[in-house]
Amino acid sequence: MAATGLRFRPGTVFPSHAANPSTQPYHHCSPQRMHAAKGRCRLKAQSSNGRPQISASSFRDVVIDGRQSEDGAPEQGGATVSITVVGASGDLAKKKIFPALFALFYEDCLPEHFTVFGYARSKMSDEELRNMISLTLTCRIDQRENCSDKMEQFLKRCFYQSGQYNSEEGFSELDRKLREKEAGKLPNRLFYLSIPPNIFVDVVRSASRTASSSSGWTRFIVEKPFGRDSESSGELTRSLKKYLDEEQIFRIDHYLGKELVENLSVLRFSNLVFEPLWSRNYIRNVQLIFSEDFGTEGRGGYFDNYGIIRDIMQNHLLQILALFAMETPVSLAAEDIRNEKVKVLRSMRKLRLDDVVVGQYKGHSKGGKSYPAYVDDPTVPSGSITPTFAAAAVFIDNARWDGVPFLMKAGKALHTRRAEIRVQFRRVPGNLYRRNIGADLDKATNELVLRVQPDEAIYLKINNKVPGLGMRLDSSELNLLYSERYRREIPDAYERLLLDAMEGERRLFIRSDELDAAWAIFTPVLRELEERRVAPELYPYGSRGPVGAHYLAANYNVRWGDISSDT
Ligand SMILES: NC(=O)C1=CN([C@@H]2O[C@H](COP(=O)(O)OP(=O)(O)OC[C@H]3O[C@@H](n4cnc5c(N)ncnc54)[C@H](OP(=O)(O)O)[C@@H]3O)[C@@H](O)[C@H]2O)C=CC1
Ligand SMILES: O=C1O[C@H](COP(=O)(O)O)[C@@H](O)[C@H](O)[C@H]1O
Image (tube, rainbow, N blue to C red):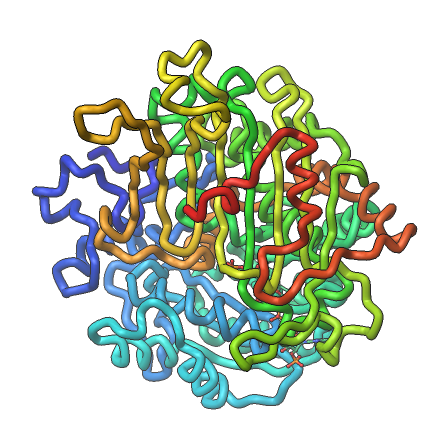
């Protein structure tokens, strides 16, 4: 396989190469497989914008004989990357970022010379940070061979700096320690802002002034929420751009790092059977569904200021929609893809209040167990009307999608945890088998389901003849269940995105014009919901959500796919 310019990740092979051990997807890292994995993680030579970059591969290439000093810091020569997790004491850092960094290290996807720093106000020694990280290692790696050895090696590369978020002294001290670890190598620095949004700008101001790399790149991964509406988002962008170029800002939407979402474009653009059907001519409606079987437990304080529309719909579901509906990009380069996504978003109608249903979960007892209401959370103001559930019908006013309802549904404390994309096709015109199907022809239409999580799968519902002498049809599934088809584990979204940020690959990060277009769709309705104090429909914790969602779908002659079947 040609390597230059292409991105090879562990497992990016076609089955026809399976006989060649050097290209086999590796499942777990035996020494031989580790060697193969190194190759696959490291072959990328250019970032999507075509600029030469100090990619992970370059580290390995430049430092041919790189050695570590006692404390794990790299020695002279070559390049290095320092990853500073700002807000290191927080929930996301512990739950996702450190485990993802360790998984990348374990898979040999990090550069030869790297250092991880935690930064937060909490007082902690390096040892305490290491202890914290090791205790919260609940990643996919923890059952693997050599995990504890690798963990020890990883922890040696982790350090901590305590400081205020608006303090140039704190970040100057960090800069001093970073320089020490960089030990004269070409320094590249990645800051991950895993902090509440009200301090994003403080951190960027202080860190960019005092802790930017002197000669390598400096990048900032910015977590959501990117504002509450068009105005605050615009303000945030303007403030960040006082200190950073757009090129340095990596706005993360972790749904874009999920395997099935990444696969959406492959499915569409590399299979002849799908793309010709991908329009209003054959597709009746598209459904984007997110549900969680737990409430806002522990995050109520943050959540109450945002609500489910801002937490899930305006970003995760809308990003999936844009990828789903975009025209074929000129190439797979980040700017080509983001150009197409922004065109779709700009073609969308502003969401109307009549096309939205909001809900909030209420307390519920079942089987002797009681489940709290949203407003029982002590961090939620009493009498809050913040929606924990929303359903919406959105439309793309362009030639491809004119009149096709895109239905979104997102909720917390529902009966199941699931994220999926459902594509319901039109009925077969003049269907020869209509007698066998019955009166409701819409029930017998094809449905393509991409289950993003859990149990990743792609399946297509088709009408099929039940074997036998008669002519009875049923709805059956052509099912690609990932756990059966692929032996390898699916990486966490944060692994992919962290690696991308280090490689300067922006394809899965949100550009500022995409963000503006996304807020333009939702801001008017969010304002109206708040100004009119629209009361959410209450639904019991653990239920399927408000019935209003069914009426909304029925207005467009749609049945929710996740309700009508349970598959
Ligand atoms: N947690 C999650 O599942 C997800 C989080 N996010 C986003 O990631 C970011 C981080 O989230 P999360 O880790 O949950 O946040 P936390 O509330 O855990 O905050 C992270 C750290 O920031 C510091 N901090 C907290 N509140 C304040 C404050 N008011 N002023 C100054 N510092 C504060 C604390 O560190 P210290 O006191 O030590 O300085 C804390 O450990 C947020 O933007 C969030 O929206 C996005 C998706 C999912
Ligand atoms: O961004 C967010 O996502 C999580 C759900 O992420 P998942 O990868 O576990 O599906 C959600 O719980 C949280 O409220 C939201 O802020």
